[in-house]
Amino acid sequence: MLITFEGIDGSGKTTQAKKLYEFLNSIGKPASLYRDPGSTPLAEEIRRIILNYQMDSTTELLLFASARSSLVWERIFPDLRDGKIVIVDRFIDSTTAYQGYGREINLGTVNILNHIATRGRKPDITFILNVSLETALERLKKAGKSTRFEDPEFLKKVRSAFILIHKQEKERKIYLIDGERDEEEVFEDIKSIVKLHLFY
Ligand code: TYD
Image 1 (cartoon, rainbow, N blue to C red):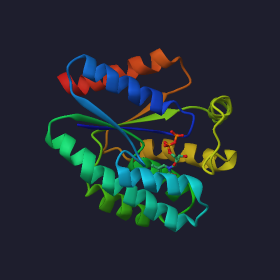
Image 2: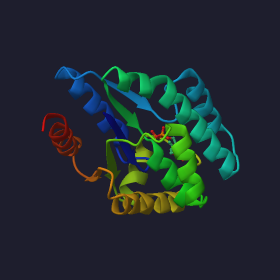
Image 3: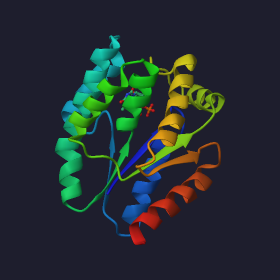
Image 4: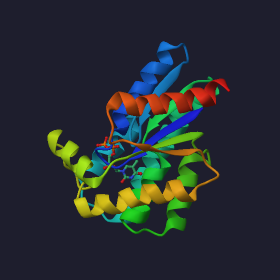
């Protein structure tokens, strides 16, 4: 089973992905946790390049796709074959939201690259952590984080894009989770949804 966590920077998705990973392993369900871009030596190098260089949006899109391809091929597919539950911090919906809606790259192009990178494998469950722009910016300020993806105007577009993806992709299991609440409360929601898929 492939579970992805999505949301704008500061939405709390990384914390929740880690909690789910720890919970599943604690109940004897072997799970792995990866971050996209990253989690293979090559994808980590690509991640470093993406975060450290200014570049045009098409180059950026292609680098995200390359990093994802490496992650899918070298980690996700072998783990799924072994029967593991694979949890990924960001995946295809981040590319649709950031490069598609955010950078305004043609959505058809984005979809094709997502398809190539994943060989068409879609997530089984996707959680989109939804927080207000104010909350996200406040959390990012506290964490002392700033990258070129964290401009407020840009994040505003990305935030709406995630909500739109949830509304539009009805054939997928995408859950929009209210991330404004206490960490434990948010996790209770996630846990009950995952349990439902695992045991029923
Ligand atoms: P991430 O590692 O999730 O950063 P954080 O943990 O701080 O939220 O992602 C790094 C940045 O890359 C993030 O700002 C979102 C951006 N991104 C894209 O623009 N497109 C993508 O396809 C992905 C996966 C991430």
